[in-house]
Length: 254
Image (cartoon, rainbow, N blue to C red; front, side, top):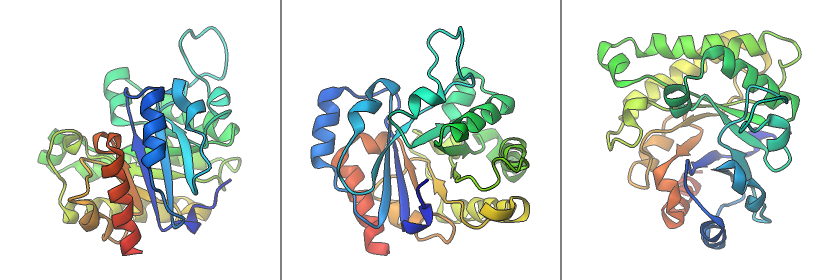
């Protein structure tokens, strides 16, 4: 497994339903990761094999895995298949929860299968606009972490596994709305304390990423927050020059 503590920051590009071989070739020619940061490209499954690179600390990540390991599940991609080409996998992204009705029980199964095949899960959590406006967003976040992460790590089998978590306020994803540094700091500090109080050995070493309309204009103020250990970037990551600029901003802060 990769020691995430060796990196100053972690950057995850989520290409979502975008890309082709020509796009990947041009992207990798111009992408400039650096030795202090971990850069993960999460592409559609069909392109994972094409993401292999000799560039330093650049890794492939899957956008999802099946809750099933094998069997009669047409169209599913298992963790064992993903592990042939990837080191990381997103689990519980808000779009998977919203559009594919993924429950907490499904997410638990996915994380356990990811660990079985030596994948590092990037577990996503976050509130919607209604939760934010009601003011109960911290309780929603607590439920999401408690009902998925805690059951996994309550087993001694998974206690020492590597984990990344990502806060993605749904109301700030692709909307042009930006969470303020104070709002981000509040949630990241809360999540950190929640992990410290409940998950033993990994409690202080879990990187907490922020994802919600990140770009080169707001990256510096976000990354300056104490418990922000990197960024999960959607639309802005499709522009390789923009994505590289964000990485360079982090390099200047280290």
